[in-house]
Length: 115
Length: 111
Image 1 (cartoon, each protein chain N blue to C red):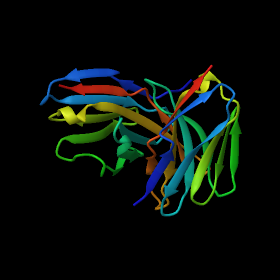
Image 2: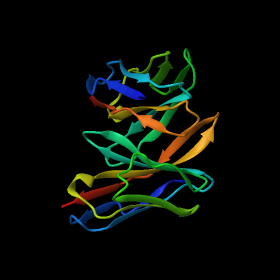
Image 3: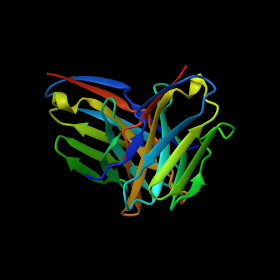
Image 4: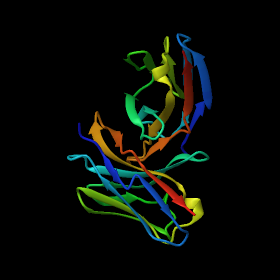
């Protein structure tokens, strides 16, 4: 079965370090989303791309977060410098348009802990 | 501002005890409402898409319904394997691709 692949699954780092999370969307999907999930806030949309072009990154703290799609098979989310409040599970999802709306397929997430 | 509110936050049921989860939404032009299931340690998994008021979708013990202001996920005779967090999400109608999620309902089904 086709699936969204995220790496790493777990990341523990110290405050101030750079963190890079990677996502391989499902082949043929042309929309990629980055979400962050915490107990307090639930699933928050950070950024999304369509045909590799960034459409909206208003959910991201611009001074420390950046999202890119260097090619159709790779999306990255970077945090520099990381802070303890960034600790969360980060999900990547790729979208398949059916009936005019986007059905999302999620990866298993990257569990980030910033000490 | 677009909002999605789910209730209850948590629901504990005995096996076979039917119930409903609620999702109320406020969006400028609903293009689609989604239900997802999330198991611990995993990403959300798609269940249903509803497009317009009056629409219903079914899958095994689950049935999703939609009105102009809310959606219900009905669970009939649940089993322990139905235990999960159920997430509701809406696709905004502004012509974009932004899918906004509710906080979810954690369902526990006891044998």
